[in-house]
Length: 107
Image (cartoon, rainbow, N blue to C red; front, side, top):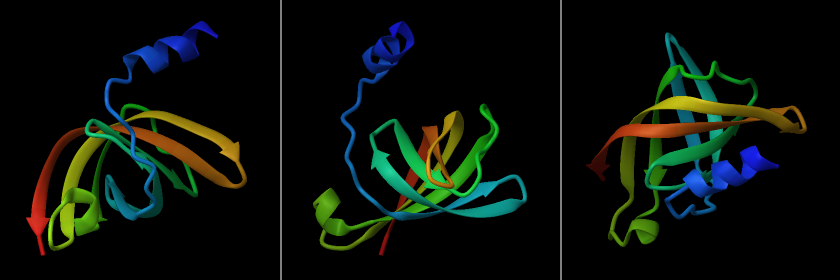
């Protein structure tokens, strides 16, 4: 598949397979989700319903300190944009988002 090969070539960041709960804010609504993998530039998460491609989202991740080399957990506040949705597994939808901005809150 040429498109799959192109997508793999465009991925320039290492992905870390980590499962963390997320609260996604999309417009006026909040959605519960769970990460599947995270990189410096994006996140893949699963949720009960998909989001419109191109839509803006905000989300918070509570990153374990050990993952980041910090003595305490770190809350990462992110804004991003949905770039892909796929419904290949069960009743959940995988959503990929580009992280456009982030900031850290240290506990």
